[in-house]
Image (cartoon, rainbow, N blue to C red; front, side, top):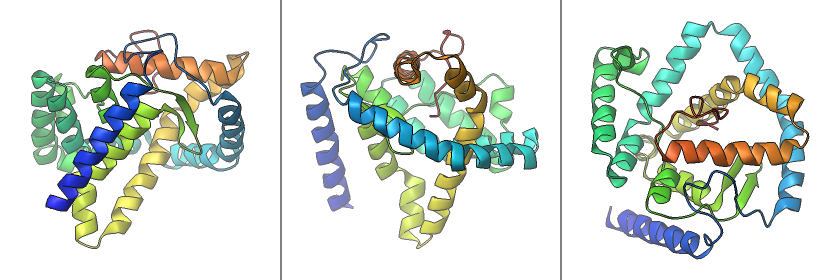
Amino acid sequence: MNKRFFSLTVLAAFAVLTLSSCASNDDGYNTAEISDPFEGVNRGILEFNTVVDEAVLEPVARGYRYLIPQPGRKGVRNLLGNLSSPTLLMNELLQGDFEGAGNVMVRAVVNTLIGVGGLFDVAGAENIPYEPEDFGQTMAVWGVGHGPYIMAPILGPGSVRDYSGRALDAYVDPVRLWLFNTDNEEWYYARSLVTLIDTRESLLEVIDDLRANSIDYYATLRSVYVQNRAALVADQDPSLAGVADFSEY
């Protein structure tokens, strides 16, 4: 445990120091600009991602929507959100958002006990909101800028800050640690696969619209990503802020 804690501390410190050094051109709340020194490579990766998406991910997502009724898909999404409660709570506390932390704890208890393990969002029905939080947002609250824009294979748009945050969230995820420590790694990978399919299904209309109406799809995707992240850092609903909801991308 001490070794794991030491490794986590070193990783977090390295991420913050690295991102702080490359954040001179943007900040966590900037809604217009992000440094994109790797644009040529990023555009090539986006072309690759588009081919893979059109050949595999989009058809699977459409098949999932066709086969599973909306209530069933909603239940899966609720369950995935409930399983993320420990990392949500960690980030709310690190951001100093104690009201948000309280909401996470109430939602986790209510939805687990009354909502059949999280399949039903009983807390949401009582107006206790779900807020997606990650360590990328936490670093933004701390004043760490995006750093360079990154288009990752399969995973899509992000930044050095946000991808570092994703890696840290995955590393400290208690569900992952428990599954790996009990030799049940396959359940973690199954959850990751279901999350990928669920996320792509939720973005079917959004991505269709961006592809159909963008003069430069790459530039539009980059702009939407940055604006979406800024809304999330400010605890705003991206859709209410006039931004396509990429909160789970």
